[in-house]
Length: 280
Image 1 (spheres, rainbow, N blue to C red):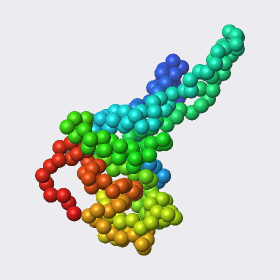
Image 2: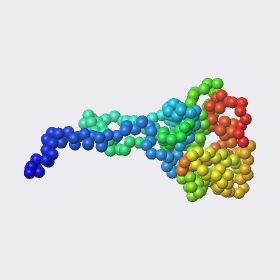
Image 3: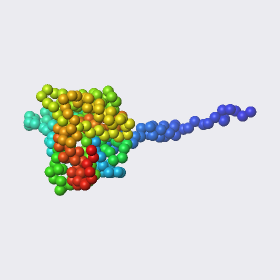
Image 4: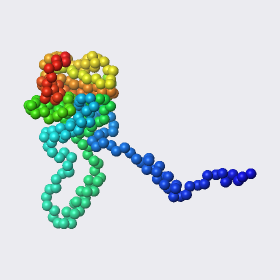
């Protein structure tokens, strides 16, 4: 009878084991590089940002164009170099103090977490749709209004090819009854429920994507949050409440009386208006 030990597989040499372990370790540590300026997570409650629509298969070009346009207006409206470090002030008293200060600044820079950019694109699994999350000092409503106002004042000089409608969102929340009520309380208060605001004519413009929420039920819920004393006027409202529902999230904002005049913030229409009949 043959010795059973002779049938056992010979142990691999130490060098071969090391090579195998290295391959497994390298494989586990490999990660797909994240696209610059693109967030891996989806839209979350509490986010603030801007929806952008574009033509089919043009999301990437639209996003690149938006990034350039947004950065330009961030500099124009809020000043340049938001993410830059503070400028040096004063003269160094001596060489040693100067070197020590530089070392200290470098250590603080290493310890300090990287600041979030002003504009972060959130990946959207829907054609013709782009979303950019923003952070202070960007205020989406006034920011988008400034872009559209400038476009209207220079309609003969088209500055974008792929961007269509810009829709600012003051806050994003969950697309549930509770989430919508909480958003409405926060977003509507400065416009309808603050002492001294007076009665305002209003309209509600909802948009639903990849969500089965009943449009009329949504409008009624938001109208109830506006409350009595403010008449509905779909023709010439003082303010328009924008409600954007996408999958399981919902965003809300209030825009001014020139929303219709500015083609509902569709800058493609501002530059090249079509003859189609305006939707109701």
